[in-house]
Amino acid sequence: MRVRNILAAVAAVLLLLPTSADAQIRIGPQLSWGDDTDLGIGGRVVASVGTLNTWDFIGTFDVFFPDDSPANDISYWEANGNLAYSFGLPDLPALSPYAGFGLNIAHVSVGTDSGDFDDTDLGINFFIGNQFDAGSMTPFAELRVVAEGASQVVLTGGILF
Image (cartoon, rainbow, N blue to C red; front, side, top):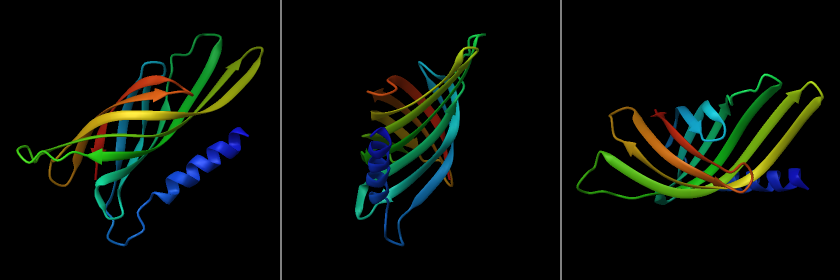
């Protein structure tokens, strides 16, 4: 049942991807810090959603490096598919604040001397952020709250090309 829910969520996100040839797609690296999972590194893709110029699809994937206890080997990753609404600031064109929501798929694997444990959870994201116009690249910063599933607060920053 859980796999079916995850596949349905992924299919829904794929339907939101832009279909026109003139869609703008930007990609780049990101660093994240989660209050439960510590430091993470990953990538991000941002694509305009069809004819809705104020909406973007943001897809991310991060591998986190939680502090392992001496008795456990912990690995954690998460993937996100989000919709973001961009707010225009006519007086400050170099700033592009945005807010949105989306789906979070989180996977944790714990290895111990007594056995292994794996779990994958589906959650909901709520986030705010800002992109900064810097010419050919676009730095960004974001605060995300993951509700349900792997609940945590995540700070993310990076650069889009």
